[in-house]
Length: 191
Image 1 (cartoon, rainbow, N blue to C red):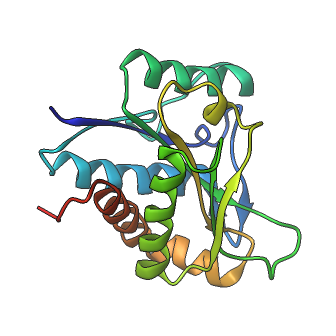
Image 2 (image 1 turned 90 degrees about the vertical axis):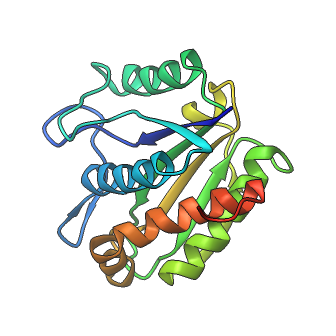
């Protein structure tokens, strides 16, 4: 029985509600979309997984407000039902020196927390991003309302020139790091 993974590419296309961060000429929702596509392709080519995307096309718009956009993503994952939920994001900060990747979970010492640890290890190893750790955030809607282990990955800071370069040029490597982290979590070897 294949493991069902729901990949949520955070935010909506530019020009709609619930768009993401900007920095160094990069647009968050575009990076989230593309990394999600790469990750989905990796998982689809592995018979141990089944995958669905919140935004299967670059023009997919979810919800009519920020709140309904988040609710729709969670509803899609819960109704499938997915076994795991991975939300992809990029960070921003008014201080351009702040950099690195963070992964958010609802609670420590859970399946989501252990999945996040494996993904962070591989993500950092394969991209050179700084490891800012696994962080608990109980307020994030997609972590609170999903019925399965859920993580939210901040893949780096658009506002930091070093991270921006990785986010611009290494999107496949980011996806591959996430994929390898998923494999490590399950104790799987690559196919």
